[in-house]
Length: 534
Image (cartoon, rainbow, N blue to C red; front, top):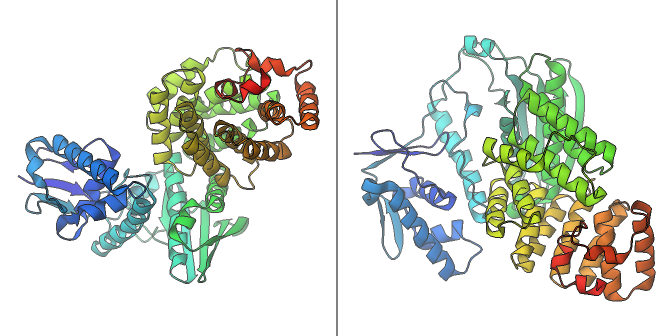
C-alpha cells in the first residue's frame, strides 16, 4: 500500500483510498516536506532541527522535533510505519511512499506552486523552501508542464500579467529577483482573476499569444556587498511606461528576506499592475477592482480624520459587494476600533454595521486569512478577551504573512499583554522596520512606544513617541503617551506642550482623563506608567 505526495500544488499526503492523511500542524507538514525531498528520504535530527527551530536552544529544538514526529505518526494512523526514527536520523520508507513531480492536468505553470501552503516563520526554513521551489519548478519543466488549450484561454476572462527578469553580477541577484517575483505572484494569486506568465511562457498550444494587460520587468544586479533591484511596469498594448522604482539591499539572504524596502517595492508593484489591469479591461474579473478599492481604503484609514474613515468604510463595503472577502469586513471592524481610539466615537460610521457582526462574518469567511487573524486577535485583546486565543491567532498571522507590519504590531500588543515585553518590543520594531519611510510609519512607531513603555525603557518610549508625532502631530493616541511619559520623567516643558496639543483635539483635556476606564487608553492603564498619572 503506497502513500503519495504531489510536489506541485497544495500539499497533501494521500493514502491508497485518496484520503489526505497529512498532519494539521504547519511544522509537522513542513517536516514531511523536508523528508520527502531529502536524498534517500532521510535527514539527521540535527539538520531538521536547524531548519525548523533555528531560533531555539538544542534541547528545546529536540523536544519540538519529537512532538512533530508524534503528530505525524498520529495523523498517519495505520500507515505510521512509513515514518521511522533513530537517535540520530529520521526517514520515510521509500517503498511505501511516492513523491510525484508532474504537473496537474489542465493547469498552467503559474496556476500552482510547489508544496503550496507550506510556510514556517523561521529564516532557515524560508531560505530553504524558496530555493527548493525553484529546484522543483526546474525539475518539472524538464518533463514539460501541460499546455492549456487555445479554446480554454479564449474562454477565460482572466487578466494577464507578464513578469520578466534580468539578472547580473553576483549570484545573489537571482535570489533577490526570485524573491520579489514570488511575492508579486503570491499577491496576484490572492487577488484572483489574474493569469501570471513568466518570461514569455504565455504562448498557447495553437501558437497564439494571450492579450497582455500589464508587464513587470524585474532587474537585479549584485556586487559583493549589495543588490540593486528595480521594477518597471508598462502597458504592453501601447508600450506606455507606467511606473518604476528601485531599492538597494545587502546581499545576505536574511537581509533580503527582512528588507522593508523590498517589501515596499513589492507592494507598490502589485498596486501598479492592478491599476493597469483595471484600466485595460472593463469586463475583467471583479477581483482586481475590489482589491484596488480595498487597498485605497487602507491608505485612507491612516489619514485618521472622520471624512477619510467614512470614505474608507464606503470603499470597503463596495469592494465586498464586488467580491466578498473576509479581510474587507475585518478592516471595517478595524476602522471602527480606530475611530473610537482617535475620536472617542464611532457613531459617524454606518450604523447598520457592528464590530462583532463584522468580525464574526470575516472569521467565518476567511479563517486562515492573515489580516483577518491579526485584526481578530487585536480586538480580542482590546475587549479583554482570551489573551491566549489572541496570541495564537496573531502568531499564525505573522507565520502566514511576515511582510505585513500590521500583523507584527498586533502581535506586539498581545505579547505585552501576555507578560512578554521583550518579545513585544522586538515585534514592534519589526513593524517599524517594515514601514521605514512609509506614510504609515507613525502608526507603528506608536506600537513601539507602547512596547518600550512596557519594558520600562521610558527613554526609548519617548523617542518612539517623538518619531510618531514628527510624522503625524495630530495622532492623539501617541499624544496621550507623551503626556504620561513627560509626567513620569518630570519634564514640565514637554508636558505643557503635550497637554496643549491634546486640547487642540480634545478641548478641556486633563491628564486625569487617562485614568477613566471608559477613556481610550486601554494598554496604558495596564502598564506601570499609569502610576505617574496617579
